[in-house]
Amino acid sequence: EAGVVQSPRYKIIEKKQPVAFWCNPISGHNTLYWYRQNLGQGPELLIRYENEEAVDDSQLPKDRFSAERLKGVDSTLKIQPAELGDSAVYLCASSLARLAFFGQGTRLTVV
Amino acid sequence: DQQVKQNSPSLSVQEGRISILNCDYTNSMFDYFLWYKKYPAEGPTFLISISSIKDKNEDGRFTVFLNKSAKHLSLHIVPSQPGDSAVYFCAASSSGATNKLIFGTGTLLAVQP
Image (cartoon, rainbow over all chains, first blue to last red; front, side, top):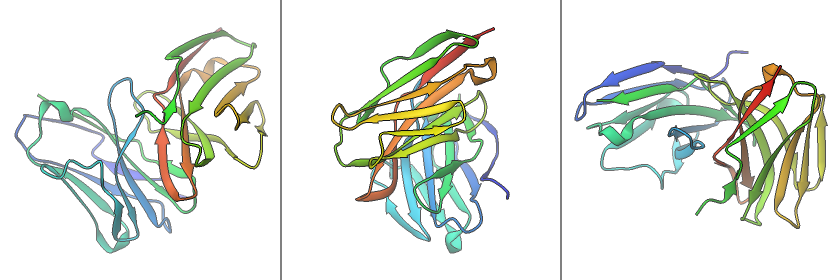
C-alpha cells in the first residue's frame, strides 16, 4: 500500500513570494491533516479535513495561508505571501480511524 | 497551553540497556495515546498506541505504560539498539475530537554502541 505522498521535499523561496505544497493521502483515508513542525518542536495542527470539509482550521493563519482538498482526495496548502517565520517542515498526514500516517514532509526555507 | 508535554529533550542510553521515554498530559478527555518515531528528513512513523481502557500495551521490544491517575505515559524500549536513535513524539486524542492529534515536543534518543 502506498503511503502519504508529499511534494516537493524541499523548497527555498524569498520572502513575500507564494509557495504551494501538495499531498496525496493513503487511498480510502477520509481524514487529512496539515501540520507544521518548527525546529525542536512537535508537529502543530494547521488544518484537518473530513472528506472535503475543513472541520478544524482554527490554527491556520488565514490572512496568508489557504488550503483545499479537491474531491476529498488530494490536498494543497498555499502560503501567500511567505514570511521568514514560515520556515518549517510542513507535514501532511491521513487517517481512517484514530491512527495517522505521515508523509515525508516539505522543508520550507524562506530567505 | 501545552496539553502534551515531554520534559526531557534528550536521552542517551547504552546499547542493550532499557530506554524509558516519558510523556505527561493535562487534558483528562484524552483517551487514546500514540508514540511516533522520527528520523531526520523523514516524516513521523507510528510506533505503538494505547487506549485509556488499558494500562499497558506491548509490541516486541516496545512497551507503553499508561497511568491515568497521574496523566502520565511512558515508552520502554528493551533492549535498545543503535537503530532506535531518533526523535520520539508522544501524541494524544480525545473521543470528542476523535481524529485530532496533539503532539508533545519530542525526545531525542541516542543509543550508544
